[in-house]
Image (cartoon, rainbow, N blue to C red; front, side, top):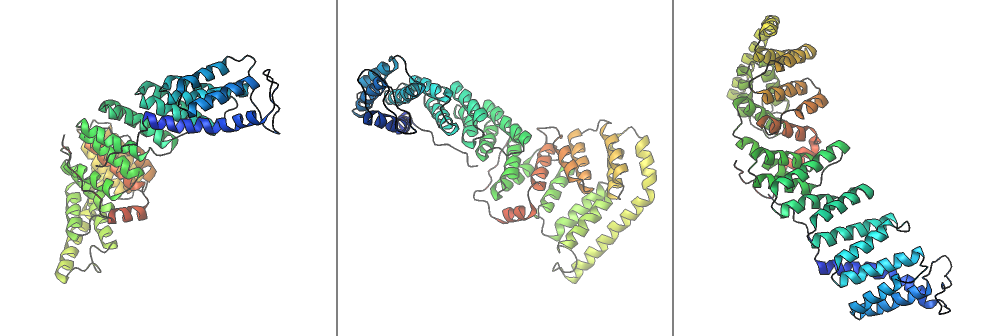
Length: 456
């Protein structure tokens, strides 16, 4: 799996960039000071129309600081800045311009703490625009990261996100920090916090965050966590690689029981990955064995509609005859079930066991009695099934088969985490939330990299 590795600015790069930022802001101010007139007694220079100017003494000291900075005489430059700060009666414009120069000199002098204090002053200034504040906060984050002051990075990123707005780059950085320190658990916690926040706001987490999440879960040998991360990636950023990784992990899951294996096969079929008649017949046979003959018949009808079965599928006459005989057998099982369904419902209601209520309830749903069937399945869920996560997943599938997609998605989100059933529920969620045409295009493409096995 390809893991996101952001380009981190070095201290020297940050210094150079912020020097440019600071000098760009200072140039107009110092130019106006130089071009104005002064009595030499510290009086304010006559402003250009619509522009502010520096107090005479402040402007003179900052011009000296600028000249010293260009000559790389950093000690003299900082002395001039300090002298400007000591001038009495400064205006707000004076203070802001001094802070800009202080930040530029401090970064060149390797004093990031001084630069941060200067930027903090500018950030709090009412004269600073929102765009300028965003740039300064971003610079502070870069300074703190280069100095490995990670608590300061996290605090400033939180401030940026609150005051400026979302930023994929900075949100990823919150995960990158513990990840770069190989603190896998903290990286997972930070990534999941962003996933939850995105879910609450109806947005999507940065793709790099999901990549880091999968990699950190792999480092923790958390197989279900890796699968969940792949499901999130397939959901928010559908690609052939993410789906290949997801399906590989699902098929490799040691918790994949026969019934959950059936669910995975249905997932592959619904995604358009089952393209041969044998797969449809196998699924239909398993559905009959599970006591769900109507589901088996629905699967066969689906295969015919997609020309995998029946006329138009390219099957030979002998194969068509075999398919017809099997469909007749399944139809006969459906007829038998419907004839005895009322008695089975009564028996399921009277039985303390969860299985009859769950299976018979599902049969009712498939027979067109969704309200009664779902109610019976909910009764079965209260009877402490042996595999509660799998039972809840099956209830979600019954909702899906009854056409209640939104309700099914809500139930899938309730399946207990760190279970094979939840991994399948997440995969169904990714599939259902991806537009069919997009999913078709994605799955038709070869993955750029092959999926690698992940063991517990």
